[in-house]
Image 1 (cartoon, rainbow, N blue to C red):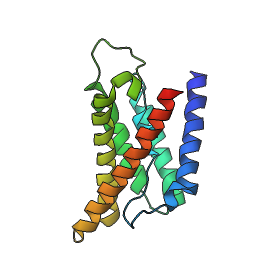
Image 2: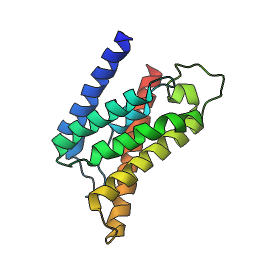
Image 3: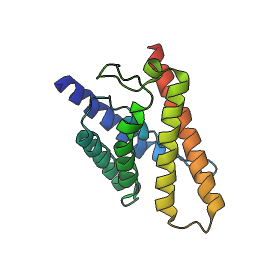
Length: 167
């Protein structure tokens, strides 16, 4: 248990630093920003306490908000993803599977993992950019932000999963 918490703290620090120092400064075509820290919230195992995942997500979002100057956007969006993730993850696994099953490309397979991660990333981007714009007056820019950020985030997540799977 202590090892799991230390690993989670290490990944927490890595994702926050990567987003704050590098990824948060990238804005491709003025509409696509990589949001790799969403991956941290999507990786909670089946038996992880829901209150624990909500706390991890809220504090990660809060720290990202502080570094990115987006008051409450990341924390609200990540907390929503953490609230949805355990129930959504249950749709992709058999009932008799292990209680410690973690969502990954290796455990779910390519198709199921793709459905799992694409929906969560799209939901995150929809909520994040809807709260950021707080209007649908410029809906084309909103769609470009959601689509571009989701696409680049998914590309990074699948790259990260591919590297983790091969090692």
